Image (tube, rainbow, N blue to C red; front, side, top):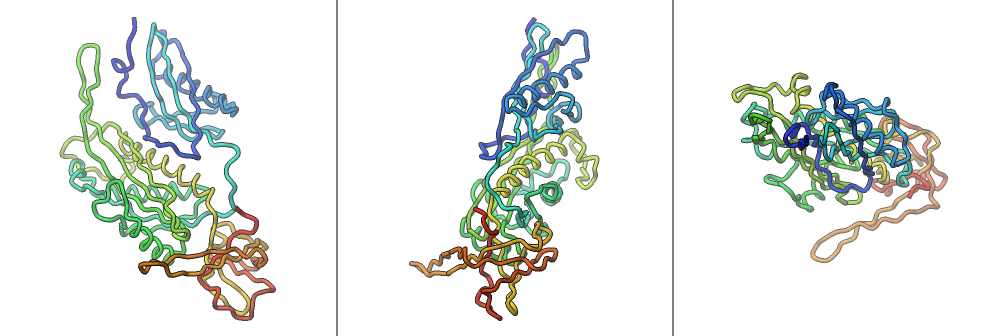
Length: 394
């Protein structure tokens, strides 16, 4: 007897996030089969998924053992989250099928590459802004009108666990242009990004917006009767901007969906952990996690360009410090900026690195560091607002 996945577990297909090709995500495909027999189906399914993940890891020469893989929850919708002792970070189940009592599962697994890009040793200063809900009317069912600020807080919590990021947040105000769905005004990025970078001593700014939290019905086919499931989308857009270089680094949309378990007139408390343990709450968290992984990957390969914010008595102060990983004895090079006036009133910046002018860290505070060098004059205020970069990086 042959059953398709659609007739058995259509709603259990794992669809954590829609990913576009990301240069730092390395995906490997794996598969596994196992006889169902008289054993508990969910137990067999869990073990088959773990074997498929281990098979994918083998393709990357990671050799993650099955017993090192832990799958969280009942493996429904967003609940397939994995933890391992290796470098496995994300998993997508591509297909499930049952043929003659044999369960077959194919997965895609994101495995962190051993050799990454050239980078410097410092965490990148990132300012996180609030992610507004672009269509508030979609929040009526459940009264989740504060999902924007709540999701932004969870974004901050997850970013704080990443080694390549030092996060400061500005969650009391949204900076996305009104009505922005798929594009963002580059002039807006430049003006607002530069302002926020200066005000908050952050090289990178993360803008974003929640685009869709609509509900829809999905029919789950059963052998005798059909069951109608109420499901809800969670789609957001991010814009990662390097305010120093004036460059948009990431512009990407992320999507998740899961069952919406609440009755029509129920008012959901999004500040309660019960909501975040629900199918939909976990979908939000896991979709955010996928974006956080991409942001950390991208920032780990970016160049730190701290700014000189003070000059006094032969010493320069820059706007990164111990929080970003700066230590006494670290060396930097001067990056001089020249502001030029172009046609039609447009201005641009020319940057040049003087490798002969090395600077050494002599004092470190939490978010600032003091540098000095023999070539510095007793008082050279002209260097304020210029940049430095880690010596011998990039």
